[in-house]
Image (tube, rainbow, N blue to C red; front, side, top):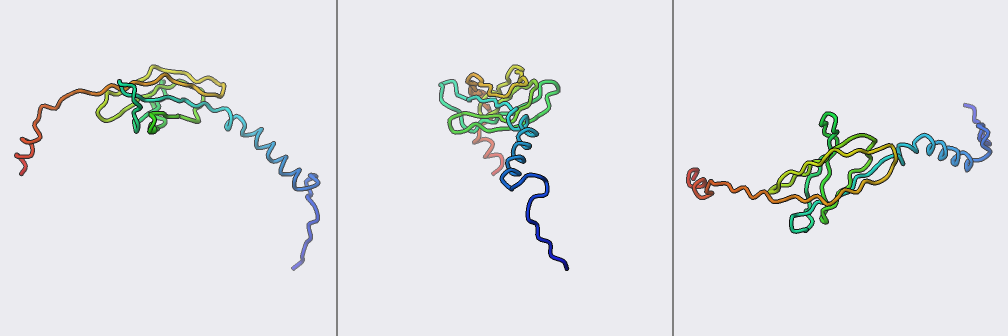
Amino acid sequence: MKKILITGCSSGFGNMTHLIKFLLLLTAICFGNVLFGQTQVKGRIIEESGKPLPFANILLFASADSTYLKWEESGKDGAFILSNLTPGSYRIEVRMVGHFTYQSEVFYIIDEPGELLLDDIVLPLDRTVDARSPNLYWEKYK
């Protein structure tokens, strides 16, 4: 078996530092639009009283054909972030047990990266009362 000693980089880059810099520049050029050309949609879910509503489900749909795209959950402060969105038209639906479902108007993300900050989304309580008595239900299946 023959041993080969490699004494330098044959690609014309002189040393490894130049090669790494070149590869980083190439990566930034190739993936710059993907990494930095994305938009975030931020918002906050609150109750009618103004208190934050944690753990609400935020669903993102494409407005053209109502295709489900993404799901997020609001944090303890009611805030949510939908990230890595590409240009297009979307709508948001917010669901929470015991509350009415919220559906947004269609909104558009243009080709410029950045952040779209939505107004606070108020999710009113669903005050529908179930007329069945839990005691009667329990008695039936004892």
